[in-house]
Amino acid sequence: MADKEKPLLIKRYASRRLYNTETSDYVTLEDIAGFIRKGREVQIVDLKSGDDLTRQYLLQIIAEHESRGENVLPVNVLNDLVRSYMLPGGGMMPQFLQSSFEMLRENQAKMMKNMSAINPMVNLPGFEALKAQQEAFMKAMTSGWSGSTGPQPDQEEETSGEDLAEIKKQLAELQSKLSKLK
Image (cartoon, rainbow, N blue to C red):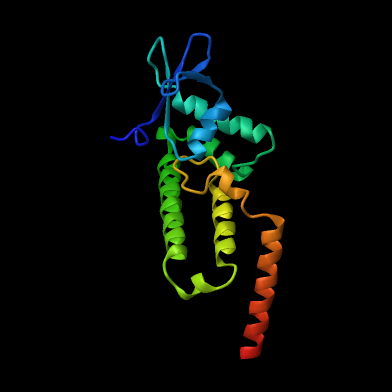
């Protein structure tokens, strides 16, 4: 199994500091969130007891993002999650969420593959910029979700204001051509 397929092992010391076993340095919750955004699975264990603390820390990452105004989950979804904890056996919510996210990742991958497939649109001016915008949109929609396959943060910067102006210009030209065909 390749290193990137194995979860990144993070050990929590008694001092509550988090230690990345691959790079032999200490990490923060934000660092861990960054690993996850890049598509890396993580496992966080207590050094002394060996207890798996991954779930606890992932929930803490989500809570910190929510407290900074980065609303990932709508209030009605949060309410449903709380309600699911009140049901005997936890209800169907965990399985539903897992299936939904798996389906989202599969559909995202198919959509990106279809956009990349050879088709007449590839030759249209501005197609690459449009594709970059779509990738940025998918990244924004899946930001922070485990297994996200969206573009990395440095790719997002490629779409600048100039690119947007060029895309608008090209779209206007295409609309004009389409109007003439009618």
